[in-house]
Image (tube, rainbow, N blue to C red; front, side, top):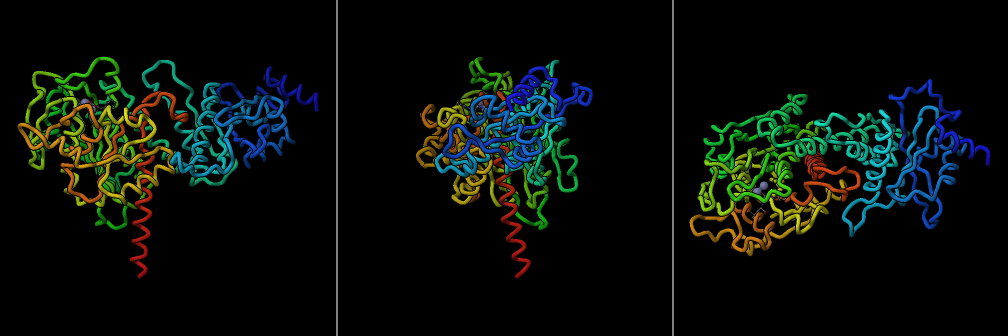
Length: 526
Ligand code: BES
Ligand code: ZN
Ligand code: ZN
């Protein structure tokens, strides 16, 4: 045994193992494999292999577990170790630590720890292989093929379109499991979030309102049988009397677009739609109330609401969810110019309410006000809007969770349940009259676009403002400013714009679709 260990270790170092022949595997199309390993309950110095890792270990007469033991301490959660030349099909095998087996849902963390551990471990495993320029990776399902696929797809994403030197493009494949349905679902969920990341990370000179709308139209083209796209022009926006939206867009040379997506997935064509609305400021300079220069570049992602809701519609279409969804995105830039709105200006929203614009940097609530009025014209089952609305939301919760302000306990429960599964969490915030009083106190108009005590409870006064444009009984406002970008808090996302909470929106829609199709089939039976 001693000689075998030494031979394998030497081979690993020199890449000349007898299980690996360089002639069979050319340098740039090598295959990699990511396998999981659990911490053994009650034994700090031991481990348990996943089913896939165990069967590879058996095929190699125990070499994998042998190497794991001699190469270092048991792999901690999220850590990885690479073995070279272990198997002739896989020159590089990354073994990743999954933490404890069957960790399940954690009441205090409000997420499914097992799923999060799988996403984290597999993302790390895929990334180390990508860094080794491995172009195809087989991935251990680790008992949850969907979470495994999400980890792989999210972990491998890198926005390097505009760089000369790019990361290796890696294709992925499920290993050692027949749960192809779960795997493919996970790929679509991950791709959805990556689409939102792509739009959010893209610079504002490239992702203009027009380019944003064209990109989404292109992504929806394969589903044209069930999808209609309207790219509403400035003329249409004027006809709709969306004075609040126009007061923001008028400072910019870029024309605004009101993007309207209809996904008709329900077998019942008359079924009331789910309305998703997203703030689509492709760049927020603050307008005449100009922002300070430090960190202003991040305001290219101020269309994160539009990006996540539109990506959720694209994903719903790809998943063929049996539900009707309408996605709305008021898209424009917020710029200072001779034509821009000035502090103290009064504008009229689509529902006739007048708004005193005391701070042109509080523009998100203005574009959303008109979009929410329009959303009501479709008699929706529920309205959910997402917006990078306030810096105060980031102060309150940071990137731990999206803040949810809702008038509906039912809607809160649905969103919360969805977020426990996705790990992209939500946290309920208040909609007290206390805040409403602070935005309905205006010298010149019905409303003021900033709260009377502007710094206090900024996320809550913004939500109270939006509520003035809502009559629907089931409405939720998601303030996603805190989760807009990722430094290193979410371990399975690289640094950059996060695309959060796209997967939670998709999961929410999927659950709604399931509930309504169950109701539909019951009605059909009786
Ligand atoms: N887009 C910003 C909010 C934001 C800040 C999003 C940081 C993501 C990260 C929004 O339009 C804004 O500027 N809000 C102001 C409101 C204030 C003027 C009442 C803010 O939060 O400071
Ligand atoms: Zn702003
Ligand atoms: Zn903004």
